[in-house]
Image (cartoon, rainbow, N blue to C red):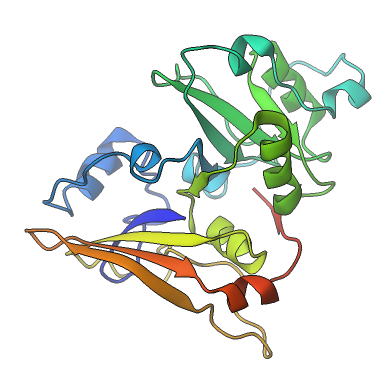
Length: 254
């Protein structure tokens, strides 16, 4: 898990301000006056990053509408779609994986050089959306029935594409689900010298609160760096005892 956050743990300016939109990204980037260094995929030597659909569309957005009615066999649509033209493209170096079980994201921009989109869906994802992804040669993996099953999805990333190192740059709900499932090994936090506030503003971990018998997840500090203008980068390992006691499965509604 790798996130940039304000000193009070907020990962955006407001629930409705999506940082992938240029006007919001510029303001967010101004919170840190330090050079962030290499991008996460190089800094942590990962093969893929992971986002939830909430990082890409408004939080109340529903499934895409107006797509052509599905004509393909549902059994075919419910199999992984990994066109060789994308998977075997020598120019592709990284995967941008997104949990999108409800079919909310309209992929329409060209990918940055070296990147390819990989959508994580489930059997309840609208069939017209799955067909639309296939028609656009967008890769997807099917994991779970009513929601995306995160352990199964990560297993499929390894089995189908050989991905063994992945960094979640997602929002608090997805990161909390990954943590509760024991799927996070390390946490990297880049804290900006700024405060955002707001009771409803997303934080590094949201999701379901701890249950009566659950304890906070313990972290072991691996490295820390204080940059000249006040940005602090912290890297932790999730303790072995926390990973061992985590749930064996989790789902994500996005």
